[in-house]
Image (cartoon, rainbow, N blue to C red):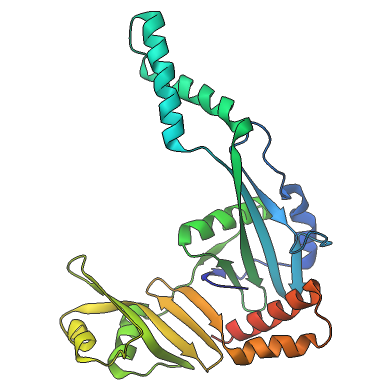
Length: 287
């Protein structure tokens, strides 16, 4: 379900409720691109037949944002634009001005849009109203901000801020690699990225013991841990970055078996989704 999470904390005054979402989201329901639209985004249900544009279970909400974007390859645009410029020069005996060239490009895009293919991307947003967190299932802060922008537009405001610990994550993770031990159920495993604080040097190690002399020497010469993989209580594997992005989330076989057990004889898509959402949110909330 969740592969990567960008975590934000909600202002204490922000109260996300079922009633608020029922009222706010429908006006921003996803509508496909028209003939001359380049990009459209909006909320969709977790399934095609979902009653609401969100899913809720015990104060845990899931929003799905669908983005449709027309594909207009730059080389194609540039080639056709060059032809238009050449024709303009032949007809007018001069090169087009910058504004004229921009108008040609805009007109060309409008001509191409109705025939362009579309790509669709869906982003999940998990709102933990119990713990005051919003988590976006994506791999970058910029994409997370795009998702939050739509929610902010729908709700009118969204006072949130990136998760900020009391101590710098790179300092903590560097110490964990040096000692070979983590805290709070997090145990470093076999993947690390080290960066230098004085240059752009980056060292990556995968599927190797982190207590090797090579890695420790890098740390002793001033490099710090920017990414580190963990096992969490033998229930989940993940990677944590120095800017607190949670990546490569993978539940253990124990948890996957638990999802199957909870389903019993009911193997419907809705039941599987409900079981996955409940178990994933419960497990990740323990981090």
